[in-house]
Amino acid sequence: MVLGGDFRQILPVIPRGTRQDIVGASINSSYLWQNCKVLRLTKNLRLQRLANDDSAEDINSFSKWIAGIGDGLIGVPNDGCAVINIPEQNVLRPHGDSISAIVNRTFPEFCSGNFDMESLNGRAILAPTLDLVHEINDYMSGLNPTAIRTYFSSDSICESDSGVDTLAGLCW
Image 1 (cartoon, rainbow, N blue to C red):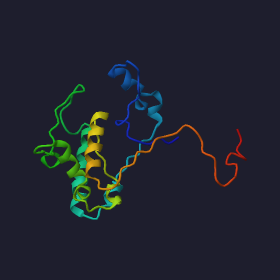
Image 2: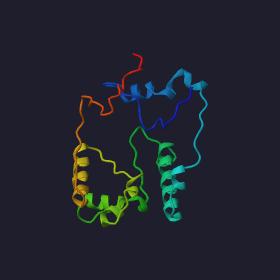
Image 3: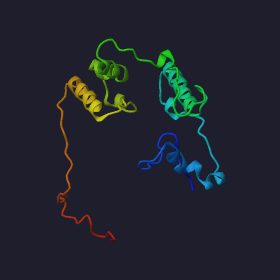
Image 4: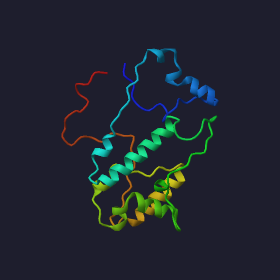
């Protein structure tokens, strides 16, 4: 069996569970864990797609810093609450509207109006609440000169124009 991912990113959900309950339910707390072999990725493949070596070096430095926090190498031993110093190059100090500053930093080509849709790939703004997501989306929608469309989902199936029964041959 192969398990993939970073166990620090998504912890098991234990309704009304304590921190101890959650840690105890994680895979590496299982009696089976001693029989597992852990393989670590050593090359950041996202960095290979970058054309600019300076950007790759910045992202590599950031990746190592984040991994160091997760591995407990940065900061001091703690009981779940710690103070971590953020390197100055990773701090965004907005003057005025913070949403505008975040969007301009994350999507500079989009804000200038000269952008390729591919420039949006691989970038995201993470937000702690849906309200903030809506604010960011509204701000970016206001920057977009093209028509905005909202697509709603549907819980019904449309008939095919081809006249072919698409469900024929399926086993239930």
